[in-house]
Length: 323
Image (cartoon, rainbow, N blue to C red; front, side):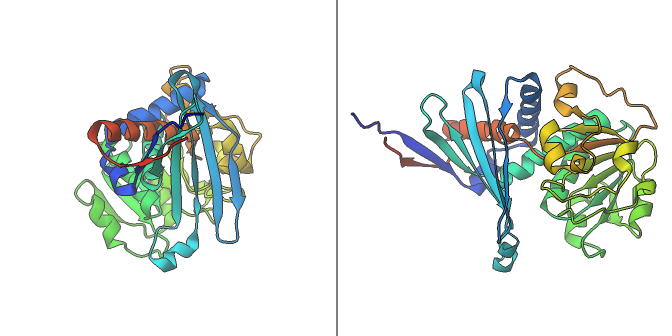
């Protein structure tokens, strides 16, 4: 049998970042949600496994009508901090659905960061009150930063940010990123900051509830990022039952998201709103929650964007991959 002299394109983290921009990532993630909700795109059963060193998982899916197939392997290795390295690690592979051969391997860290920020922003534009002016952010790390960056870009009404970091002290580096766009400072008291907020963003390692349920006032919207594994949570007991619930994926939210703590509660997928199949019809006093666990189609649509741009611009390293 004759050998096929194909190539595999490798795209590192810096190259991946250079090929993404806010508008294109937003459109790619929007497409992922709509495809998922219309059943044109499929999300396959997720792997999520505890390891001695951390947590490891695989998210995969496809869009048969668009020739898109692939997976992301990702997890959390806390020991990397001692090495001066990022504890979150992710790699994405795009597969040719006609042959099963790999097309492209992309460092997935930047993709995960940007697509999650875009998902949060889409949740805000669909669910938060349009006159929202004040945000309370839990976390000051990579995901908190991208969530806040997208929020400020898409919602110019936001003028004040209170944040709660892991130390409870001022984080000058975090503030410097946003001080030219808003009034920002550490929260003196987390419950008081939540009570004043129009929007609450939780982006922490999710060791347990971050505030008391009665701190959340009517009209508040919450974007919840941290609960992505069994046993993790950021929201207090009882809050889910007071709120209208929206998720990226029904199954995943009940397996590893905030809804694992109340899986019997009804919820809607964000793709229903983005695809026009449903409308939020938010009332001024509604509490709304977007439970974000991250779906494979988000990774794959953004990876496709990067792959296409890399080919067009001659970015990446092509290696021989004969078969």
